Length: 239
Image (tube, rainbow, N blue to C red; front, top):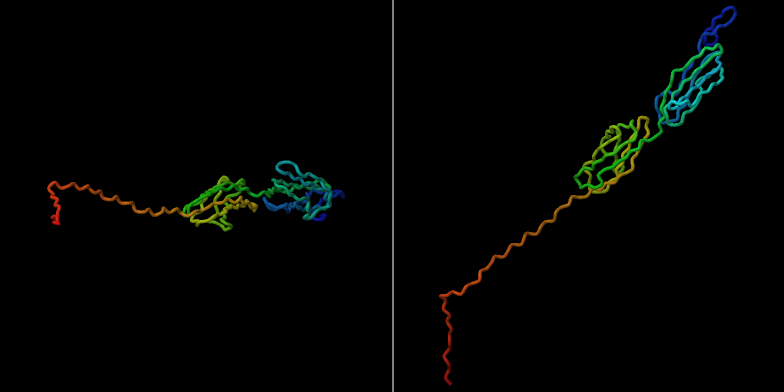
């Protein structure tokens, strides 16, 4: 004979129930998120006595409660809101003592944004390259994007063990605000504080005036020992 969705055996007029309750956890259905998580479950049994929800957070019991019920269908049992790694198990017991244990569900809630430390060359000459380096505190971040004065600059920068380096070439003369943005695996976005760099023009050396040429040296003339000096003397007039 059958009773609801279950089979029972009739022996000497007594129903013997050997069928366990059907237990399933519908939510959470993912392994990680940055949002609150609803625990929803279904327990099916014609003679359900109770079900028990057990939730561990980071290895410690957070919820462990027994609820009397005649059956639940996709019912909200609890909501998880805080960062942490959760392990969820649901058990159910019927009036005959048959017990079922759900599949163990695990989920991580991460609402923390990555923290980015950024530094760069603060002064450069036009034609030089700005050197960028920094760190990210979230190990799930594998790349980030640089922005110069609000515009995306180049391709994403690889992050290895929380460290990254890059460069920005070909900037014109001017002042630049540079930030880095990164997303973790669940979509939290972190933005660094802006760093400022200045690119100056090349310094051109002024044209030098031609060097003054030294005047030629002149030698003093020596009197010629063979020269003759003639003096004209007019005769005196008679009175």
